[in-house]
Length: 506
Length: 72
Image (tube, each protein chain N blue to C red):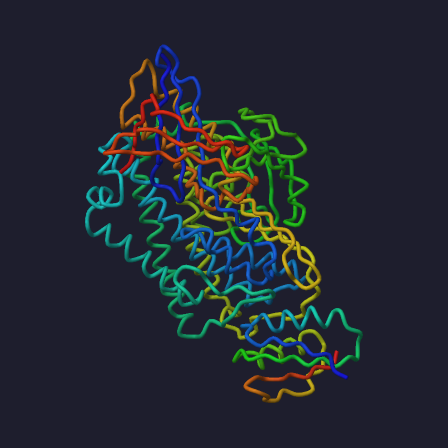
């Protein structure tokens, strides 16, 4: 009899998801699905709101990456009102954004994805978390992690106006200047941020790259899929998180698209499947070809590894050296190994820290000229930034009064949704054989999605009209029955599930 | 006769965004009166007039709000 293994909820990510793994009679994996059962619906309920509220509304999409949505929305407002921010405003925005990239990437490395390596992929689940990390690296190192993130968040609160949901960006500029006292804080923090980024890279070197078992895991087929890649680059083709064109390469490394944000819809199509709320973007010119691994197909990935793959290099010297070491070690470009995203993420941490130093010392950084208010009549605007997880698109249309009539959000995790599914299935097929499955192996299946640092609360905005739902009735811990409503709105009662249900929670 | 835009209750930068939208629908030379009670509104409207080439005629207090008169 076939069996289904369900990992629900999956852990150490932002949002809610589950994995269903279907085994055949021999106990090998037939299919595996990464499902997103939550729905947020921001694209629908923002319609009718004044466009200028979007930097505040969309920052509520997520508590982990509000700054990415705030900044994409702010840039969309620039485009909507056809206004170019002043140089000091751009510098303040970019500084703020690099603070965010720095702390968000560190959050993933130390709290979410990193424990799989630092503590170990098959370590007891109660150890695979930040407490296990601190136990492994020592209290002093743990305190450093917490301290640097605390200082970063405090600086963000100071510049952005609030600790979590910033009120910094407005059409044509920013809401407040950087005073000389804050500038001194920025300079001091940035210097320490570089030192901490180097410390983290060394830790990765010592713990992961010097461990043959981990290197084999990174380079193995279980965690490798062939796709294209997408990411933002500056005018010299180097990685940029805040501004630039978007470049797309195929799996051989050949550039196939380079587009300005306003042209995104001619490049990206969005496919819908009935079994999940997440959509599946693909390269429009190549058409939707299903969940097919190919170096020349229509699926692409975004993420730190995608940004490195599409770029000519990093814009800062120390990160550039790490970039070169990254490709020299892994042997090819583009790199298709999913677990190498962890390393690419740390290269970006160093890049963000170095960029902070550059901006903090720029003579225009504390200039009072923070707004251009030559505003035109709003019609349509697109804003794109590189969120920590990858390319993030905000697209707004308004009436002549600036009231939203259309909203489209293509969120980083959305771009990766097909690839995450394929990665999970490939890992499951490689790792689970002959009915042999345990908690450690299931965690290793989860590692296939965790490397992407997915943010599912960000990624589920499709509103099909009817919401499929399953309500489970549990009595004294026993699942007795469920009431299920399908996509057509039909409700039915089903008895207790016969499938094995393994909760792989920490 | 001036066109009147009531932005009382709105927080900056909303009054100026509304003023920009309104201004773009009116012919040059029209006088626009913008009423707002956000504390930073006088700074915002002054900067908007400067950046967009409008003439700020006056800013006066009226009924617990500021009234900016702008010639487009």
